[in-house]
Structures are given as structure tokens and as C-alpha cells.
Amino acid sequence: MRIAEAAWLIHENAREHGFWDEERNFGEALALIHSEVSEALEAYREGDDIAMGEELADIVIRTLDLAEGLGYNIEAEIRQKMEYNKTRPRMHGKRC
Image 1 (cartoon, rainbow, N blue to C red):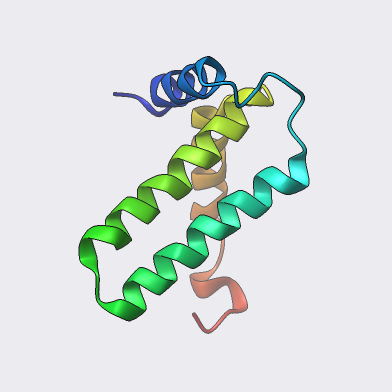
Image 2: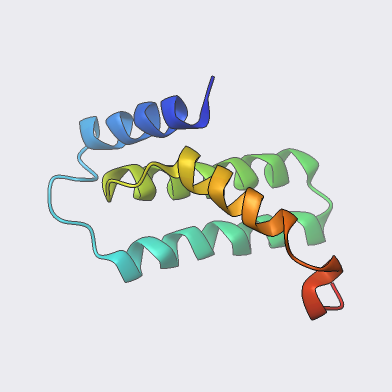
């Protein structure tokens, strides 16, 4: 499955379940993505590989839903960003 197809399917499911009945607040949507990141970190700290995988999936699902809902072609955005990243220097000035 391509990323664009996954984004469409995820967003359609979210719409069917009422998550887009009203306009989404962008800040709240990002906070929900961040909450999934925090849950993944907690699962990692607890050594729970199953929960960690689920939380990583939740991060992607929420991100793809938001991108699709806002009208971004996230697959094209990812490809463009990957091409740009190829031009950057090693670690581009960061330690990790």
C-alpha cells in the first residue's frame, strides 16, 4: 500500500467515525500526535515491545489523518523532504 492510499483510508475511517464532523483544531491535533509519542516513550521505558509498536502506529495514523484532512499530499511531501535531506551535510550540525 502506498502512503497516499494509507492516508486516504485512515482519513476516511476517521471521518466515518465522526472525528471530522467539525473543523479540527490544528493545535489539538498536534497535541494528540504528541500524546502518542509520549505513550511510545512510556512503552519503551517499560520494555513493552508490543505497546511500543502500537503507539508508533498511532503516531503515523494520527499524522496521516491530519495531513489528509488538511489536504496535503503527504506522500509527495515525504518524497520532497527526503530528496532535500540528501543534500544536507552529515548530521547537519547536530550531535544526534
